[in-house]
Amino acid sequence: MSDCMLKELRIGNLVAKIPIIQGGMGVGVSLSRLAGAVAKEGGIGIISTAQIGYDEDDFSKNPNECNIRAIKKHIDKAKEIACGNGLVGVNIMVALKNYKEHVKAAVKAGADVIISGAGLPIELPELIEKGCNTKIAPIVSSKKALKIILKMWEKRYNTTADFVVIEGPKAGGHLGFSKEQLEDIDNLCYDNEIRDIIECKKEYEEKYSKEIPVIVAGGIYDNKDIKHALSLGADGVQIASRFVATCECDASDRYKEAYINAKEEDIRIIKSPVGMPGRALYNDFVKKTEKGRIPITKCYGCLEKCNPGEVPYCITKALTDAVKGDIDNGLVFCGANVGRIDRIMSVHELMMELCCND
Ligand SMILES: Cc1cc2nc3c(=O)[nH]c(=O)nc-3n(C[C@H](O)[C@H](O)[C@H](O)COP(=O)(O)O)c2cc1C
Image 1 (cartoon, rainbow, N blue to C red):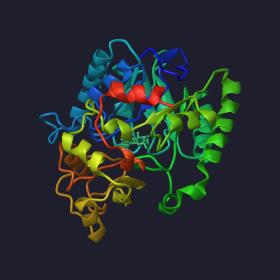
Image 2 (tube, rainbow, N blue to C red):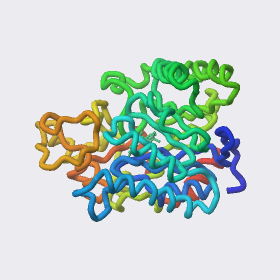
Image 3 (cartoon, rainbow, N blue to C red):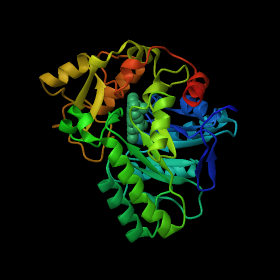
Image 4 (cartoon, rainbow, N blue to C red):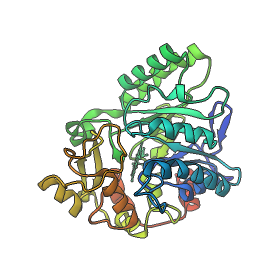
């Protein structure tokens, strides 16, 4: 894209012409098709590794094997689609049972970046081979979390982050806030937290003589929102929900239609087996979970800390049902701005709109 009004994003020796990261969306919502299309436009396309192999033939027998295989398959495919443009990376949730294996598989497959949240990615640097060009970023929602991570990385590995993703309270999926905080977002004055987080990383930029770009995520809808994030001191943005309503998004058409039809009042903060609150569409599935547990008949071994006999439902089943198109009986994660999305467009059109509209 030649006429983008935004400044390129530099992460060490890697450059994305467009400072937009398409946020990782599991299960199966952001795979190679979406990530490749975003990279092709000069942005950073992110593949979610959460149960990434869910549509492989032998997934129910060997979920972990399928996931490891699918990480390489989707990174290769996304890079092929991107034709050398932009960057292709992965989102790996710390809460996953096979977190370390996912990181190693992504590095081996040549991921440009690894973004890691849903827990503190304390061990991430030790999983990245010395000399490889994969850049790493924690996802944080508070200055406190960033301080803990960067202090630990310094103490244990004498290293620091290549970039940082700040995920605010309007994001989709799992959220690093309490239910009470999410019920009164305005009261959080989150712009101040963003400014504080940016101050915090400056100390490490000086110590390690390198720039640590900061990416702001959560509720970014248009060019005005992007400019606002940049005015706070961010170097780029991460956007997820808007990319669901694109032709190239890897979810089923019914999933995309659910986004188009959703209104603001259809959004709920839900409980998740991951142990964090999440934002999702209020549907039959969520109503059912409000009435009691949905017994688990099969465990796919996705989370490090999950007791199938106790959790409210199986998160793998809920998310895979949804992405395949059973939007009434599955869990449809969404950001707080989903009510504003009213049509499906191509990734090219969306990137043009985000970059150029004033
Ligand atoms: C459907 C959906 C699935 C998501 N899945 C993940 C995930 O697997 N891991 C993760 O770290 N974040 C996940 N997120 C969060 C996004 O990557 C992103 O940071 C956030 O949604 C940005 O806010 P926005 O959707 O308002 O643009 C998900 C978001 C959505 C909407």
